[in-house]
Length: 419
RNA sequence: GGAGAGGUGGCUGAGUGGUCUAAAGCGCUCGCCUGCUAAGCGAGUGGGGGAUGAAAAUCCCCUCGAGGGUUCAAAUCCCUCCCUCUCCGCCA
Image (cartoon, rainbow, N blue to C red; front, top):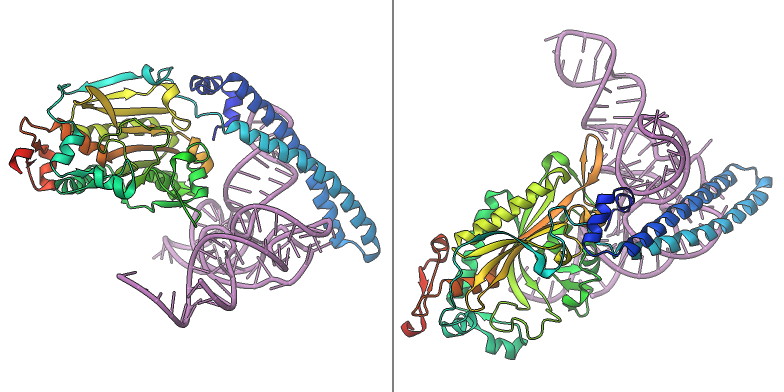
């Protein structure tokens, strides 16, 4: 939720929203509606004060005065109800308009769309395609069974099998070792949440079509543990001295992937269900930009430890999503496609999500809204894709990166000839 | 799943239609007193939104699990939902 006061008073804040694609006419309409809302609120509050006072007098009045006083209070009530209706209409209008305004982009975010990102950094070698892409290799080596999954669950599902399962749990342990070094508290959150939570986390109504709904119960499957982690301090006031409070959630993630037909259909690059370790930070607003850099550095630490070639991009304003004021994507080289593909991303939501969540800090001066940030630590199935392709040897075997070997218990996955 | 009892401030807890402007206690903060500490005495002590103002401030509205309703007036009555506890049933 946007800060209407700042939108009204700070030109830089407003231009940040316009940079994200908010129409000036929409912003003007929202501000104008807010103006009317505040005026209507003032009118209604004065009427309410008068009515409250009249009503209170009745309690103190002598019995013979009561009737006339009740009549007077009733008259004030009729007036109040008219003003309340005006107020309610204005509130609704402001809500509707304000919800369409995205969180303003940070100064350092490049303007433009999907292709206007800035490459911050590029690490490692862009290698040519190997003999197999990850999907072929996965089937050949008995790591992924998509065919039977389709039969039982539908497209975009997979059975992860054999050494891939050890690899999954190794990645999880590896990721937790790294994030715990940085004071993230490990969490296994609920994967089902109420509608209310989806709304507050900003996923409803915009992304409702991407979310699985449980028939018979008013519950929804989370598409990322971010949803559940964001709700951890909903409506709470945290002691400012204790910030930042960091959580790392492990959960399965469920996504309908509506509107992606024909895109990334092979293997497990884009599936309806995958596991992920996600970082989430409740942060002091004064230092949230440093916190974003820290999330990014953890992501780089993980990806580079896995010996994957990658680049970091500063995502352009038009591609940020409503809540992010700035977002970095880490993209790993995928040999079979000859392209970088997203493996993690991290965002600073500033106070946009916290305002709706009611997540605040408290210090000697009073209270204020927290900043919230999130970032992927390790999205398992996608990381497996990159490990399979980049670790693939000429004989079709897969070499496990050194950093992962203590966790996984083997140094390579044998190729097809060796089976 | 069935039956019952509940949800009040940081905490305990009173309050069953009208000075509730939510008692009292505990905790916390400040002051006084005091070899020190404790005790004692006094004062203060939630959050959100808005108006006026340069500001300090002053004033108003909302907030007793959440949302509706009844009433001139709701912590209190009614409805829906959420949660907690007790008993029974079922189940890893």
